[in-house]
Length: 162
Image 1 (cartoon, rainbow, N blue to C red):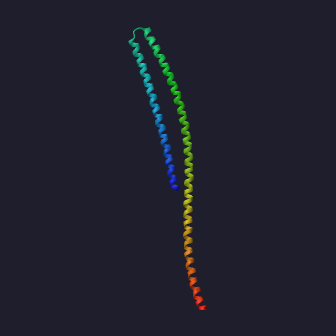
Image 2 (image 1 turned 30 degrees about the horizontal axis):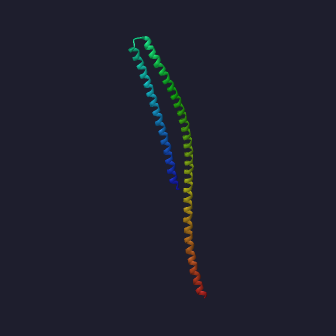
């Protein structure tokens, strides 16, 4: 795997983490909207209680109705409280997961920095090795020329001797 491929994979994973964080933010926003809807429903119930009082002339009958509705409201409020507790638990769990994600992201950034430093070192090493190989190739060509000249001189000397 090349460094570029590895960097692309790391960047892709970072993008996935960012998308996950955006999804969590959207879900939290949805929960806030539902909470507002519950409050609006509660306001509507209060308005209906006011209407019931106006419709019923007899105080006792109206009081009985209010007591019944109040009992229902207490049950709904209790349910609402339970829901709120559950939302708080989920929110705490999300905070924990978010913290874990942040820590993971920090670790990834550290690893990317190490990889970046290693890539720089490898690039410098490659440049140095290429320079040395070029120099060796030049020296080798020069030696070939010298050996060639010596072989010619040896043949000339052999011809003179023999």
